[in-house]
Image: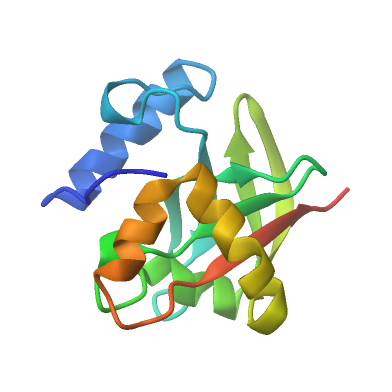
Length: 144
């Protein structure tokens, strides 16, 4: 997935979002070749709509997996709490925009998927090694 989290995350995210939208869902630099999506979610506490660029793992069946790694930080990213509170979100993938249902994986479902995610995105395993919290996985299923 992505590399280390920069110091100024908001500025970094704003640039990625602008580049994503200007280039039909593609970005360059350190994220070149990484599948990126934009998630549109509502702040669980603030009620404010936010847009966050995230790397994702396509599942081949139309679903996507996103990882709440937060760069291996000891805390979950803020978007994790927003998806837990309101799991129906809009995403932008390439030039498409559609609604998905975000399901946090736990137990056996997470255990089965985790090694596959790490195999395709080794940085996720590195992030897990940096923290004692279990890094959450979400499966995003498109709603028609």
